[in-house]
Image 1 (tube, helix red, strand yellow):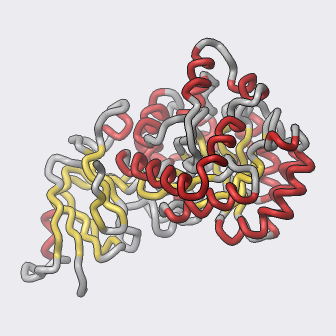
Image 2: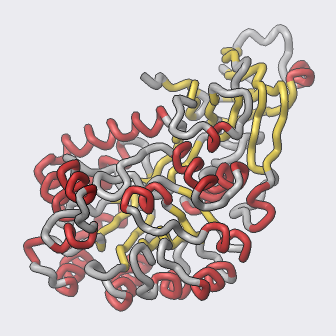
Image 3: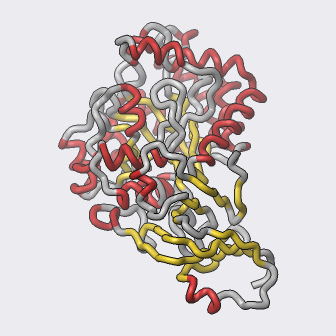
Length: 412
């Protein structure tokens, strides 16, 4: 094959979710193929071959001089991590709110007093488009340092036409996958009138948002949008060509799971409050349950019923929920540790949940989430003797190198 190639050689362990199917469910979620003393050969942006070092000569001629080599001795290789739920398009912070919560104030109470999401709306509107682009780029660099090679990000901190569209453009400019979270909250100028806000958003923002975003999302929860409002919003977005996603069951069950199934959503995300009926319904459906343990930890909420979902046969993905208020965490390795210690998932299940299953949520499981020929050449080298350190080394300085589209990324 002509052209420049990248050879990652002498990998101590290479771990990748088994097979070619997506999403992975049940026992298949924990099936990981592990190769010792391995290599990955990349041709341009695509993986050309994966195998053991003893077989390298079968795919690489000794006289081939158009190969850049990466020495991975003592390191492990896993697929590039896929973060399928972030709110990376924001300005400012909520550190004062964090301190108040630490002193006993609840997230819902702060939101009701004009804090929470609405506090970030004020800062994000004030940032302007260039400020938003700089913020998303900065957050993207943070994610890369933790091995995230593909990220989704939502708007939802503008809640006006100009800032919502600027947020989506900033996400796309940073290489992210944009989701229009137009129904995140009711903006302060409408004084809680959700119906009037949806009238505005669907008439004035949706037509242009649908040209930039790939999906639409809604926060279906007490104090945000109810099931009828969410159905109206999502139905209009589906008619505009957007895939559908929902924030649901974060604090209470308000009908998010049945609505997601009814409308054929790609995912319903959070599920901290989901009960047995919701677990069984998701297991019978094609809707992926996206679990966000960093958010539950950050807010002191119960963890979502991950073990019950997997055992029932539901499709499960794992993401950070990176945002300034309820999950100021961009680290998928940390989420894998929480998955293993709090959600009762195995390290193998956690790996699949934030690679191939997360890629499935984003409509990219045919090319992301596995180290196999034909997949995009996104991989992470862990400075560890065993790939399970991904979950085992709690908040460790674990990522030694990140390769995106066949090119090593400067992490510092």
